[in-house]
Image 1 (cartoon, rainbow, N blue to C red):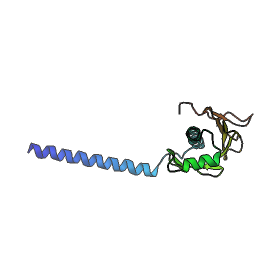
Image 2 (image 1 turned 90 degrees about the vertical axis):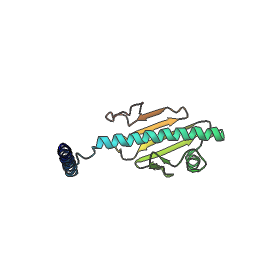
Image 3 (image 1 turned 60 degrees about the horizontal axis):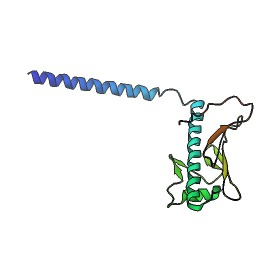
Image 4 (image 1 turned 135 degrees about the vertical axis):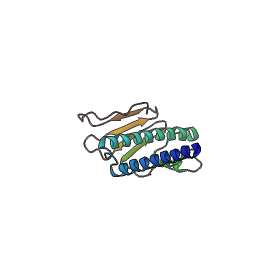
Length: 161
């Protein structure tokens, strides 16, 4: 008799928990919360861009170790695309493109020096018409960020990201 009672209570408790979980799920579907704010989208976009800059610097170093020179963008893209390369054209779920807009919303200008001993590039946000926010880097591997002089200070990407 005691076992039946414990079993009945356990079944009722499980049913109550299942009903509560179902009700919570239903309320979250109706009220998914606030849509992503523009600041969050900007921050996410910039975090993606920083990852792209890091990937480009890494790719240049790997290219240099194999060819004893830095590459321009067309050479570097083919190197990244190459199946035998330790890198791939997909980075963090993003498809890297050969066009000037290498990832959605970001244009790349990459220049290698004539002697191929150095390179510089700028990754510019195409959607930021007012401040023209950009990331810059070179063979030092340091990443710089900036925008047009006089533009209100934008959210800074922490170096530890």
